[in-house]
Length: 215
Image (cartoon, rainbow, N blue to C red; front, top):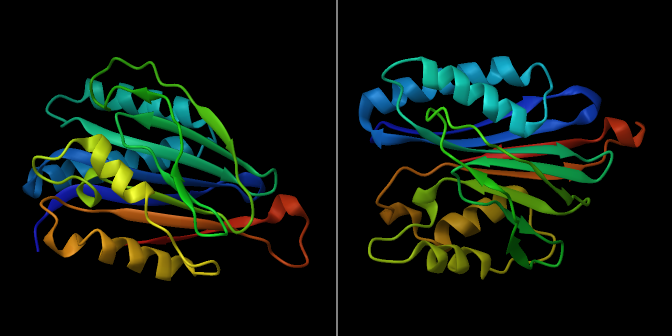
């Protein structure tokens, strides 16, 4: 197995919200893995303050830019708020997430893209989407979709064209994506994180949560 800089993370926030994270450090090998660990540690610390996703990215970029030798990284943050049916996205040079409806249809969500982390340029913004029970959100790194010699828009279109069986569990959805995109022959590291809002019986809506599964 190759050592790389792809990672995914979940951070529990207040009021039943969850911050979903996927990131990709430039390059491969041990150095990329070390930088990945540093990004993850800094992100956990910043996210504990429960800031909006774009402000988390801004602070993470500031820290990385002041530490000489840190490799740049792309990162996508998704703050899931099932109690309010809301999803807030912010991206640092990362690919958009996939949203799978209850009927099995899938589409990529729009998110404003800022520069990669570690550049010191900042300029991150957030976008808000509706999030309904039964929908499944999938975050991933570029190794899942990229193929040599293929335009990235074509690669993303292939992912968005996938259809799923209504009622599929999160684990089955992940298995389906990995199989249909032939991840065994991927040319890069791959990280995939999927989450679906799950109502918790006996609790008010503000206590609902998103159950994540990662590969």
